[in-house]
Image: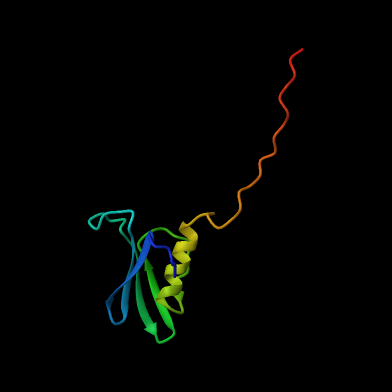
Amino acid sequence: MSLDPDPRYVLRRITPSEWVINDLHFAQDDTRHVVACVYEFAPTEVEVVWLRDLPLASTYGTPFEVLEHVERLQGGSRATRPIAIPHLPPLVAD
């Protein structure tokens, strides 16, 4: 789970065994606001119904793992170093 003070994704508990992951970049009345529904299948297993086309698994150990994978996938490359682009010297005019 992210310690970001202004997170994009949040995990909200709806019932004792159900959660949703919300994307705060979209308004609550926007269909893109809810990313996934997470259901407790067993004490150590949750099942995910994805409401977006994400290449992620449908079962996890905890709801927090689901959130972590969404953040990692959608976070892009913020955690990686920039890729160096080789530069060539300017062309010399004859």
